[in-house]
Image (cartoon, rainbow, N blue to C red; front, side):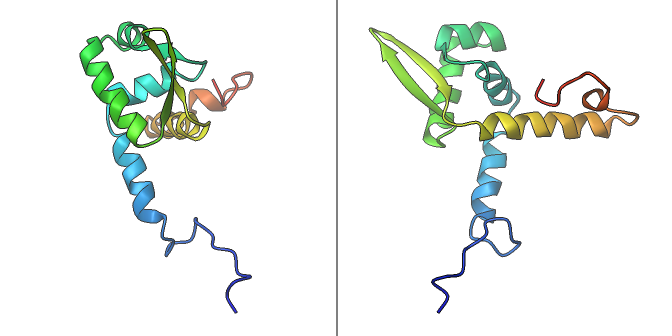
Length: 121
């Protein structure tokens, strides 16, 4: 009877609400947000990410392990080097949207609303 009814994950009673909260919790760390931003343009090694986010490679590896378990990132190995990349476009979009929302909290016209500035920047 309900087999034909599609389940929408965006309803208030969705089974995905708790999972969405876990996604937000995973992104509630500035280092992980910076790493997501650094991976928008493609894959990077731990050492590259460490330099970009100004953290030790050990710290970056711990964050990457969490992001990998949460399926935000995936890996590719080349010899002894491991490269990380975003698993899909959603993490990048979430971070971009959060930054845009943060811009709104400052008052005035947010930078992303100015003519000539792309929202995906």
